[in-house]
Image (cartoon, rainbow, N blue to C red; front, side):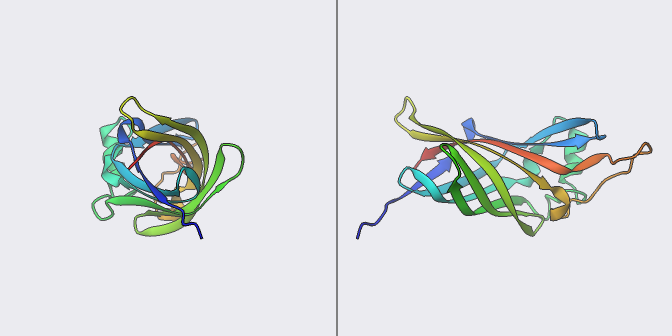
Length: 179
């Protein structure tokens, strides 16, 4: 009986980003990102099917380019970063759906609430960098409803609609480095 060797990968933070966008005033998108994050991926050799993925972000590292808005997002109205400093994701299933496409299902935990999410993943390939480190690249995308995690703050507009959409688009560019 052959035993598969588990390969552990870490996130190359210098070449990765976690971003989001949400509708503001129902007419345009506000974008932001999380500056501090970490994670590991365990896979069967270089085959990422059924990979085990653990990831976390520092909730207080959120930045949108506006200090007042960032402070509000860190408050109890949204992420409550003081009481819930980490946003985490743990995979439940990572399965191939096409040539370079995968479906990533797992539990996203924010403000102490865990809910299932599904992300679409595109595998960009593998390459050795000039220093001999093996790298793998992925593009992730998905959508969540922020109210599912208790991020309920909003204001009704006089003209109808709300100040901030419930739907949040998630996008990430992740480069892994083999440990």
